[in-house]
Image (cartoon, rainbow, N blue to C red; front, side):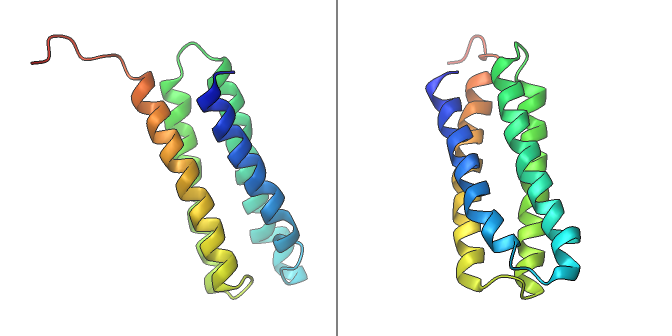
Length: 119
């Protein structure tokens, strides 16, 4: 694993550790609906990070991670709007997800074929 990829993996892992106790306090009726989807989404992103890191053709997987992160943002926002988490906890999630998104953006840029004959 390259250092950048290790950072994104660790940030995602930290997000999961932060989220699970919060999800466990969701109303029981929603814990297995929205809560489970949030957890599944975060675990999917983590698995895709590992996959991208081991893959030769990283770009399609990186775009898949990007899409999954957008779904995660939606679910977190929904949980906040339904008052399953406080504004503060939502802001913490958003900040962590934004940081992961920025690292991902850099990884995508680095993985794109370099443009020939620029200048």
